[in-house]
Amino acid sequence: MNRLLDEIEKGTKEALVKKRIILCSIHNGESTIAELSKEIDMSVPTTTKILNEMCSSGTMYECGKLETNGGRHPNLYGLNPDAAYFVGVDIKQFAVNIGIINFKGEMIDLAMGVPYEMKNSPEALSKLMDIIHQFIEKQVIDKTKILNIAVNISGRVNSESGYSYSIFYFEERPLADILREKLGYRVTIDNDTRAMTYGEYIAGCVSKEKDIIFVNISWGLGIGIIIDGKIYKGKSGFSGEFGHVKSYDNEIICHCGKKGCLETEVSGSAMYRRLMEMLKGGATSSLSKKWAKNELITMDDIVQAVNKEDVLCIDLVEDIGRQLGEHLAGIINIFNPEMVIIGGTLSLTGDYIMQPIIAAIRKYSLNLVNKDSVIVPAKLKEKTGIVGACMISRLRIFEY
Ligand SMILES: [Zn+2]
Image 1 (spheres, rainbow, N blue to C red):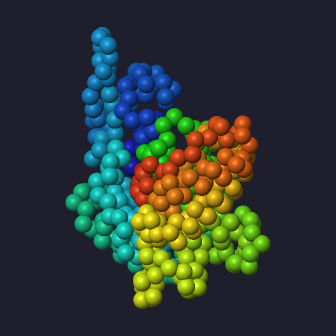
Image 2: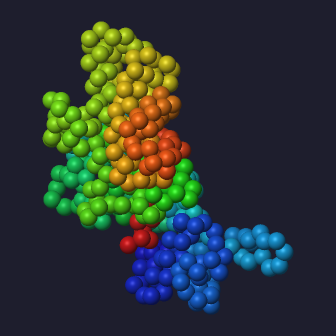
């Protein structure tokens, strides 16, 4: 068994304290003994004793001294980068992003845009396993130090039980268990939007904000909710299914099986459908040639077309932004968040989508309420999901 896991999974009181020290270090970075003892609510001598043990086992290390104005400079302690590694996997509609971080949270290898077509089939699952195996195979680290692989899955996911109900639900047992068997490592799964929310929270645009709504407008549409600094999951982990709120009297069947869902008009897949309809109807775009040749048009192609000032794609993304803003106004009225982060593939169109979202929110939410909310694009951009997956991969080992 891995030495670090052995240290924290003994079930003793001391092992629990060690977990708490690690969690504090994950969320607060390097700390002094005084800061740690306050955070974990233990005396300084006890904290010192346990910390010394963690330093001699190589889990923590002394990483410098706190700069103070005169007087003593207390030692700073942090997570030893080489003590463990964590893999994250972010599945997109037409690609997979995969990365690995060290214990400190630094990305040591990242493969963005590995070609892959997301289909809800056993073949697609097996292709995904190959991609993960190949990525781990080429890592030059001690592989027994890889403590977890976290996979972002869209739709209904219960991260605690490991069940995925929307995607890869072929067997009557948790998907996390199936993946664990196939990969030979611990595996946890999480809803993709929630992983992105955590990525921005811990390594993106969030500084001190504690009440946050993260909007993931990619192929689908979902939100992540942080209340008082904690990710809100709901009873079984299904919170944030914003895209499946009945919003339109259209006849479009959503992939969830119902019709008129918000996602049928406000999402990357809706934009894709409308673009195809318009191209078929004779509208022209920089993507017309590709379409005429029957080549695959991906979300990245569409985002690129917008950013290269393709008028048809700009019209579509602006319209989607306006409708998203109208519906977000209601969310803002309900949650009164400090920050609303717009993330996901369509957010990569920058101002083209941000301006109509902001204008519609200002127009349709209550003035007094929306004054509290800053509306910002995700800072990690296309890496929000993969950074989130890697960070959650580390968090899961120490949180339960
Ligand atoms: Zn739906």
